[in-house]
Image (spheres, rainbow, N blue to C red):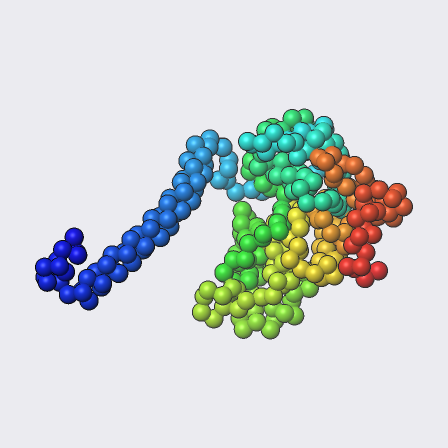
Length: 330
């Protein structure tokens, strides 16, 4: 069509070349844009599938309630798994494959094993995130399914690997662990300062411009960011503030080097004596400090005992320890 205009001298050759070039460029841009649009469509469709699945979930009574203060005042004597089988919804593979164990008050337990062995799954079942398991989970000889969610929340205080870093004051970062019974500011200050001493962070906090009232993070003007190790101690402080019967550390130090990890676990072990404490890790610096080590493998407790006994047994734990020995100072 354009050539006819050139032939009749209604268009110059230069204009013809310009229009043809522009047309090809337009087609190319449209092709790329269409490809990007289809990519975004496919991605957003998957997000919408997840949103639809979430929207169709049933409401669970008590899910939005604060932990029960009364429950935290009841002594926790034992936790027991009896022949527990569990597979995540939508899968056929059993993560827990007949797991049985009993944990008793006042002891520190270390769950160790390879990634995917089922260590974190145990905490998810304990805290009521899933109830589609087979077998029995007992707390104080009572089936966990008979507890209300606000009661289960009150029993456990957990520091996860992806713990939160709140851009609020240092004091509020810690006191959030006790949100169900927040006292007045004076009592909060005393509580926070005691916890900072316990987690060996007092000297660092004293150097902050506003002490415990310093805003943490990077987003607010005048805020101060902390190192990775300091943030992890803050998360542990939040756990201590809860005063829950059971403390759980689920690999919160995975981003630290093994030596620093071992030091933080030792600190946590010292300040949580008298509690039932669960340490979950695939690195063994903390396991040596526990009263009992439980090796999770293929969904069961394959070995258990103290560090030296397991090393001498020459089994899974011994092999893991030998492969990691160079990470730690003996």
